[in-house]
Amino acid sequence: MRNIDNQKMTRREVMFRGAQVAAGAALARPVSMLAAATSAPPLIGIQIGAVSFVDEGVNKVLDILQEKGAVNTLFISSFTYDAGTGGRQVKGRPLPDHGKQEYDNFHGGNFATPHARFYSDTVLNDTKAPDHGDLDIFEMVLPEARKRGMKVYAWDYNIFRTDIPHVDEIEEVDIFGNKASTCCALNPDYQHFIVDLIRDHCTSYPIDGVMWGAEQQGPLDNVINSNINPHPGTCFCKFHRKEAAARGIDVQRALEGYRRLAAFTKQAGANQRPVDGYFVEFWRIMVEFPEILAWEKLWNDGKYGTFKDIYKTAKSVRADLQVGFHIWHTASFSPFFRAEQDFAMFTENADYLKPVLYNNCAGPRYASYIDRMGDSIFHDLKPDQLEKMNDAFLNYEGMGLDLKSLPKSGLPAEYVFRETKRSLDSVRGKCKIYPGIDIDIPTALDDKQTSPDDVYGATLAALKAGAEGVILSRKYSEMKLENLAGAGRAVKTYKA
Ligand SMILES: [Zn+2]
Image (cartoon, protein in one colour):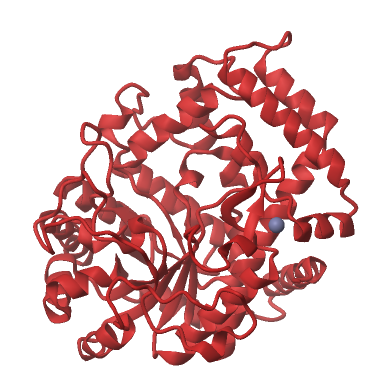
């Protein structure tokens, strides 16, 4: 099992190193490298799944990406069980004006070749995606991308199907002792698998980098920000219990605290006001059970440990491999989750971060967040009041947001600009920022849809705010070509 105390020491060492840099005594990275990085042409990345190359042909797809989107870097969805990042299109949403005109039955897995010798220390040794037979997506795309001078990154995503062999052995355990459908970051079989996967991708193929994404949050965030009441906060498996005990956290008290919190949010969802009100009751539970926050940190440290393992593994294969992380959209809505995404700390194990700044689907997603929190710890507030308070927490004031129209309006390009700036201010040149740009990410049919000008505005806002690049998301097979062209137009405007 990963030794979390060692991580802390490493962090202190790095902080000390940071102090030395400030004092001019030593430089973790030469200033000249940072200066060169800022003057380099922007990375224009796009997320893309194997299905697009199979549907349309490698060279045709690359022509379109270069001509319309000014794309110079592919983030190939190489390991994913999520139809959202690896499938063609969500059923019921319009198929775009390219690719096969039918919905797919996505299975997912590893779209490259899982080389058996890398997976000898994990039960998860059967992950080859069956979707396209023996197809190896890197062998298919890398040679053609190279000829054009395009870079290729592996884009690996932390969602597992519940029906793949042995997945039950790495699943999290909730506060009621039930298995959850998420993976436990302290489980050795999971830890080994992630390291094996990254080592396999980085060793077996001449890729330029990797991006890892895990859209998961800790038990506190899950219990208070949930449309399932009570949410089964995780993880209380034997590995988490053991690490908790090593930290001096009382497991039973933590469980009792979380069960109280879950019962309270259920009550709040049913409009049963506690005598002292919703927020006061919430905070009373937090003070009574400080183990709740201790467990939240324990969980976050596990997730961050995965980041660290990935960075260390890729760099041990080739020091010039670029390693970065997809930061879940929830950081744009929840001040609680945002507080736990410490970009300054992430720079210790990242060459770049991709904060998800999908401004179109952010409209319905933000409204939905406000709705859930209004049924939970902030039930004392009216929805409009809650939205205004949250806007202030997140620096969204003065952008003209209105809760009622949010689902149909989306968020303005100004949101992309401000969040890019915030990200850059947090990392202070220690890693690059490539905001994720929304192109046709599915929303309900009567909610905000993407237009070419939306993409143009968001892309230009990110670049003007100082981002070293953008990543067009969430995948090519969902994008209308005229919307993709909005990104290309923004890049031209920016360079002019
Ligand atoms: Zn666990």
